[in-house]
Image (spheres, rainbow, N blue to C red):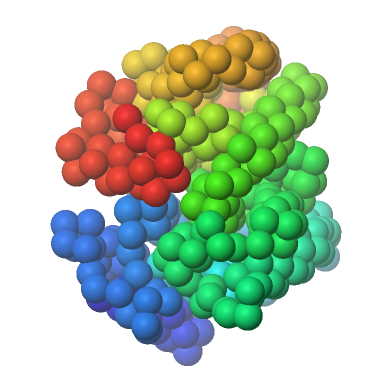
Length: 490
């Protein structure tokens, strides 16, 4: 089954490139995503046996991110049906030299989307550090054409920025992987770079090489994860990508890079170097939250604001894992809540852009009147992403705060809470101004929204709300087991 999880989107992705660009592409995307989600649910119900000599396996930690990725991708694929149809009928007027959708055929978009899913799946099931590095690099190559979808000069700039910065980060991660291999090769013996082998051999690993390797992996994968100050590719890529691609990049791709850091953190904890790793994670996490808070306060573009919000939440994840204990459980739960809420917001942002024809905050007013479904969802998404009760993000953020206080990290707790408050104030001033007020003259009448454009964000809103009041036992157990692998729990 592990092979099937990767091979299904690879096969259908290659098939998409061979088929003509028509409606069949959209249904190929949806059926493939649905089949992938069915396999993931089956794997959640019954953990499949490891494959490829243990290089590929689904453990609780990987399952958390695999479930997030597959669920979000399935909902984004449903949204893509209406999105692609809308792009065909009403291409963006600011494309270079009047180029139309025919220059970005559906087969390229669908093919890259499915290969993107395959690469992210491979990240979640890879237990060899070398294969994990290859999988993270594959996510870059598969997602780059999606950023350039609109063929605008800004899209081209964002794509190259993404490729260059991510390539620098992945090069550092490769060096960190080699350092991990050096740490495992001391004393005249060599330990395979399987996570389980390295964890079992933790006390015998060379601490100097190990610390250097973790630092490079943190910087390398942290670049892809969007941790500040390594986040500079993220706002451009999110603002220029199609909204459903932005939802996947923020809600799934960043998690893949985070998983790469968590795998190395497992090894550090087993080697008795948890304090060193935790200090780095907490420092980078608070820095990310601080920089994101400052930039959110001065944003004039709502898609870029959502991108900086992702930087903030990646910082929250890093802080949670760095604190450890129950905060590790909170961080993994927050990864799930953030993905649902950010997917919701980016899909709604696509609906807003389709009606208002601008990503400028000042150009959007009266959403509650103009967009009878997307308007309330925009407000709900704001409450969810800022950790307001009763949404699930409140529970996960509070769990991290409670753990930091109970473990005596008072300075961290105060900074964490203060930065959350600043972000809430900054985003509230934007979201509420967009939702309320008198709409512009050209948007006086309410818009009839397509079912496929509002159904996926409705499901995401319901899911993140449900997680605030009820956590299913299967999901709770999986999160607890995953946190246990990081030395935490609840």
